[in-house]
Amino acid sequence: MTVTADKSALRPTDRCAAFASIYDEHLPLLLGLAMERFGIGRADAQTLAHEVFLAYFLKMDDVRDVRAWLVGAICNASKHHLRKRDRDVEVSKDSSKLPIPGCERLQTPCPTRSRRARRCPA
Image 1: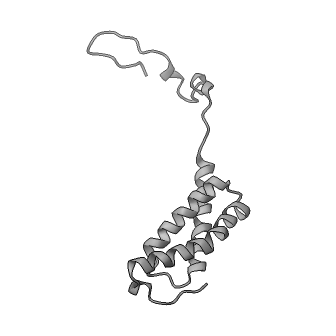
Image 2 (image 1 turned 120 degrees about the vertical axis):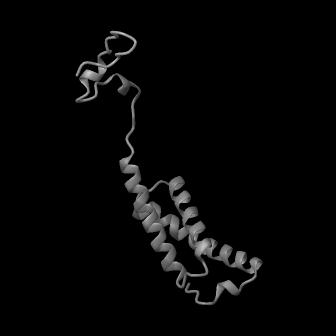
Image 3 (image 1 turned 45 degrees about the vertical axis):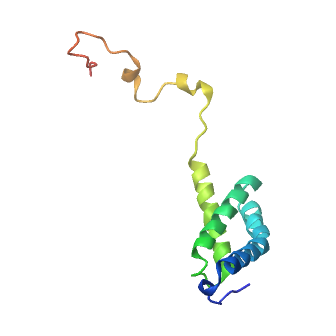
C-alpha cells in the first residue's frame, strides 16, 4: 500500500483511523519478518513491531511509502536487537568465585599499617 496523500491534513480521529488500518494490515508482515527472517522469538518480535509502529506514528506525516518504511524499520530494529543480544553475557551464580585474570593482587587484602596509610603494596 503506497500512501502519498497529505496525512497532516487529516483530523485527529481520521489520523488515528488511518493508523489503525495500517497497523492491522502490516502487523503480521512485521512479525513474520522478525520471527522468520531474523529468528527472533514472538514476544521480542511483538515488542520490536510496537516500537516500529510508534516510530511510524510519530513520523507518519513524512513517510511516502508506508510498507517500505515499515519493512526497513523492522529489519533495522531486528538487526539491532540481535547485535544487542549477542553482546549480553549471562552471569552464573558461581562466577563471583572465579578469579579475574590480571587482578590477582586485588584479591589479597590490603595490610592496615596506620589510619593515614591504607595503600596496598604495588
